[in-house]
Length: 508
Image (cartoon, rainbow, N blue to C red; front, top):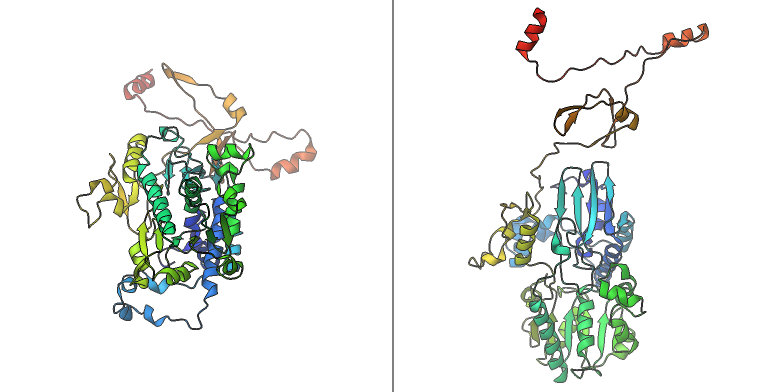
């Protein structure tokens, strides 16, 4: 809020449900009165993620609030994670469900390829990015300029619909990328899971309640019988587990074509519906209540939070961490597993890092830029140079013909273009009165005398007002005297004057 007055913001575009976790802070505490746009799956699944977060935090309320450590003089004396934290003075307590519901009531739902006018100045269009259910990239354009905002995007059709840059790019029709790395991680995930339970151990998978977990359950569905895991229970524990599994089955129009076709058979688009029906997958809101009665080992548990800092995952880390028979498998790519495990050291359980990340890599992004050939490229500074610890890895940076404009965190961007042209409409009767004159083969011009009417950033040429005719009777003479005196418009001259020819005409 110190960087930017959020009350001056007109529109917020949400690309996927991971990008809306801070929305209640903006809509409820900054004076923001604009409009928030998002797809329906993004809003509904985002609600689930925020509801889970609030539930986890409210389970362990704190009797006292510590804020003195935020003093800059003391912060320098703290251990590395806190010492290196950015803008700790702005950190706030977690929002409440009342604030979540209030924030989401301000969201306006949009569909893929839907055109939305913003104040008559620009038009925005969401296109599927293929990253998650309802995720999208945004096309922001006027009549003569276009900006494409690319968020997390994927061309691997695991379950979301893919529509990446359908305009002017062949990328929406071609899939020439090798997903061997992801297949390798999926195979390692299944093999480590199988090996652990065969040896009598338990498997813990820290995850979000939506997204990658659908793919993980689908991998297990294809692997269970061949690996002899039919008798091993799978537990999905989250305050929103039931809602997440149900939402994944009803958002058919947002899925890829293969899963859409199953709905019309009719079959559930995701195989975890069959796992639930056969009682192989069980879901619970928490580790208390029914779960305590049904809990059997060895087993596989999917629960949150992936950071290992709060949620039911903390209980299982403390329960299973002292045995080398157990395994924790990290599949979420946004967290460093070493940092996540730091508070639990020394740890006896095995740790496996199998990130399931379907987003575009640097090679794919570089190929996209060569394909689209944008006039300007704007990206984070980290993408323009190799990582500091791997200076030789030039493949870990964006390669494009146009030198990219880089930006830092918390920096306001000024895009390098100006609106040089505006589209103006002309009334039909005014257009009929024009008499074009051909000045070159194929080029004709005509002078126009009109009134320019502008409203909501839209411009319209109208015929000039006609002068008032003299009254037909004496009764209207008084009204005519009060009417404004409108003179006929004078013709405007344009172009350059040929001096020699003009002087000869004066002599004649």
